[in-house]
Amino acid sequence: MESHDETGCQAPEHPILCINNCGFFGRAATMNMCSKCYKDMLLKQEQDKLAASSVENIVNGGSTGNGKQVVTAGVVDVKVGTVEVKKVSAQISGDSSSGESLENKAKTGPSRCATCRKRVGLTGFSCKCGNLFCAMHRYSDKHDCPFDYKTVGQEAIAKANPVIKADKLDKI
Image 1 (cartoon, one colour):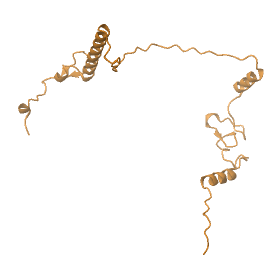
Image 2: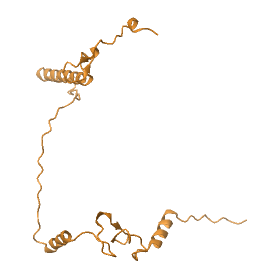
Image 3: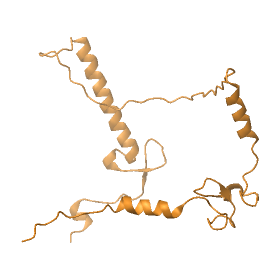
Image 4: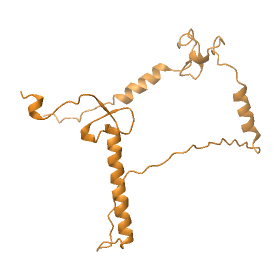
């Protein structure tokens, strides 16, 4: 292996801070800037070149021989401001039945078990019969569920496994 002196690669004696005072360390290869500041500087130079060339094209007539212009993509800085959100509530006065249903939903109390009327809150269990139950009555055999699980299971199996019937063969 070669030593560092022979290859010309030497580590700096002390770290160099970025010249933009961003708090990161820079390198001589990036003009004593950190990698982010260096990329930003290169991007700004590219934008300045594009702006200068587009201004020259506009001033000098700017059209090429075939009438088409070259479009280049660049980064656009967009400042985002705060957006005010206004909430507008409207009430329909013509239909009284819809107003009553909204009041009924607002007046419904805490969720309760359909069997024992115990408060269940967020821990309630919904059954396929459409009711809400506590932990004790959550199973179908504990609350006399009218939902027919057997028929639904048979239909699901029949749908998933269609009957395959082979063509009849001619006997010799």
